[in-house]
Length: 275
Image (tube, rainbow, N blue to C red; front, side):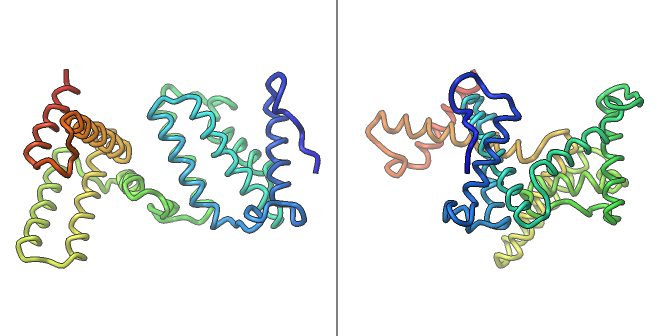
């Protein structure tokens, strides 16, 4: 199979580069001469890699590593090309059909740009966007308020989307303070279960309730709970690494230190970040 060469010389235009990538994918899946691993893959086996690549894109953005972001976006684009090739092999769809579908959807959802409608601000656009999506769900016979929220989403993100849907029909706490009261109630329930030595499944249920309420609280404050937790993870990692460095300067490791020593170093790392 002849693969267009856009690897050297002046940058290729997007069309030529895309055609080259599609041709490479077809060669990898070629029944006679393709890669054994690529030929064995299916939609189900590739899906986990797609999720992983999306997270790697988010990580590169969080680190503001722009060369890495270019590479990660390429990896993510390759996932789309992979699905397109498998879809073409099954006679379901190809890359052109995917691109056409998303282009049509964007035009349909932006009549204020591609049509004659006028929208005053981003809030008006958001309301119109949601109304359009609701109409599209209805056309797919998704009549329930929560229909169409993907099960495979990260749990905090899915909680955000579920509660956002419910809030549209008025099933919501009135204020963030009301959510905090619910969080206190759920915390008390967990404490009660701990007192009686409840089994793991009941503890998991109570912790799940607390996390769900926290996702609601983030939404009420206009925050993304997944992003909040990523930020907390990064903060923990930075401060713990500071503990490791401080101990290493004394010829020690965390396993050699007492909890009090590590707590003091944690407090020092926290103070250093707040300067």
